[in-house]
Image 1 (cartoon, rainbow, N blue to C red):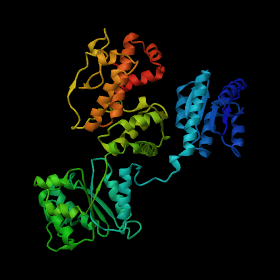
Image 2 (cartoon, rainbow, N blue to C red; image 1 turned 30 degrees about the horizontal axis):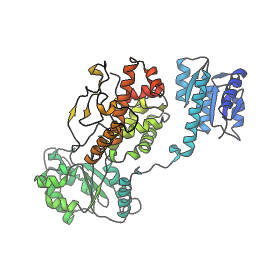
Image 3 (cartoon, one colour; image 1 turned 60 degrees about the vertical axis):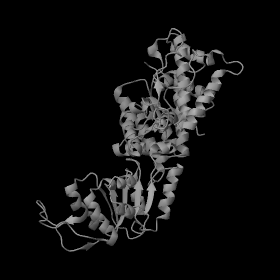
Image 4 (cartoon, one colour; image 1 turned 90 degrees about the horizontal axis):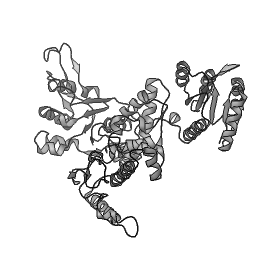
Length: 513
C-alpha cells in the first residue's frame, strides 16, 4: 500500500498523526507545506492525502485543486482550525473526501483516514470513472441470456418482440439490437426511430406512423412523412404495442406483410425497408383472447421473443447499476460522484423496485442531490426504501392469513409494542411451551422453526431467509428493550451486539414506535 501523506505546518499535528497511524500499521509521509507535496508528486503518489487548509506558502484548498487535476480519484481530507461554512463548502466543491475540523478526536481522525484508505483501494480495483460505458449492464443469468440472444440476432433483420415490465429497459435492448444489426453502426448505419403507441392519441397515431398528405384533415397544412418513412433503411421501435387501437392494427399488419402503406389522405402506395421491433408490458396472448389485439398481428410480431427480467429477479445487478447511475447523475449535475457503502448496496438489493431499472436510476439521482455526505450510507437512502421490509412482497400463492401477535409478549410489555403482524404458524411466541423449554437439550423452538421454514419453502414464498431472520431479530430486540426499559445501549450489551448495530436494526425493522 502507498503511504498516507500528512501536510501541516504544525509539527505537533504531524507527530501525533504519524504515531497514531503507525500504531495502525499504516505507512506515513509528512510535509510542512504544499510546495513540498507538489514536488513529491513528480515521482510518487499517496494512498490518501490529509492536508491543513491554512499554511505558510500555500492554501490547502489550492493544493486540493492541483492534486485533483493529477489524481482525480485520490481521497483528500481537509483539516482546519477555522471551521467556517465557506471553507467547508469550498472543500467539498473541489472534491474533498471529508472535512475534519480542529481540534479533532484522534480516534475518529484515524477511523476517517482508514475509511479513505478503503475507498482508495476500492477505486484501484474497480475505477468506474475510467471504464468504457456499457450499453446494458447485467451479470445476472437472465440478462446473460438476453445478451446471448442479441449476439445471435446480430446478423439478422428478423422482427423481434420484447416483453417486460415498465422501466425494465426494453428500449435499451431495442437500440442494442439495431446497433449490432446489418442496419446499425457496423452496417448501413440506418436510423433508429422510436414511437410510444400508448402516448399518442388515437386520432393522431395513424398520421404519426404513416404520415399525411396536405389537406388530409383540418390543420394539415403541409405533407408530413410518417415514422415508417423516417425509418427507411433502419429500425422502427414500436413501444407499448399492446395499447395500439384495433383498427390501426390492421394497417400495421399490412405493412409488415408486404411493406406497403398509404399516407393519410394519400392514394399512392409507398414502400419502406424497415425492420420492426415491438415491445409491451402486457400479456399479448391474453389481449388476443380478450379480442382487443389481432391474433394474426400477434403472430407476425412474435417471430423472436425476448423477455426482460424485472430488477427484483436480478438483484445481483443492483450494485453495478447503482454505481453507474451515480456516476451518470454526477456528470449530468456537474458535481463530484458520490460513493456508496456496501451496506447501503445490500439494502438496495432487498428492495423490490416496482419501477425497475428506471426507478433505481431515479433513486441514484435523488441520492446525488439529497445525500448529505460524499459517502452514501444506509440511513441516507430514500424513505420508500428504508420503510419497506425486504420480505414485504409476498406472492399471491403464499399464505395470506395474518393475525396480530399478542400472546407471545413478555409479561408487562404493552400490546402496542408487539410486532405488527406475523403469518399464522410462524415462529413460536415467548409464552408458548415450545420456547419455555429453554435452549438446553433439543429445544422445541428449533423444531418449530424447521417446520415453519419447511412450510414457507414448500409454498414458494420468496426471501424466506430474510423473513424469518427479521422476525427473529425483531423479537430478540423487543425483548431486550423491554428488560432494559428501553435503554438501547444496555440492551445491545445484553444481546452481545454493538450500539450502532442495535440502532441500525431498530430502524431497519421499523421498531422505533
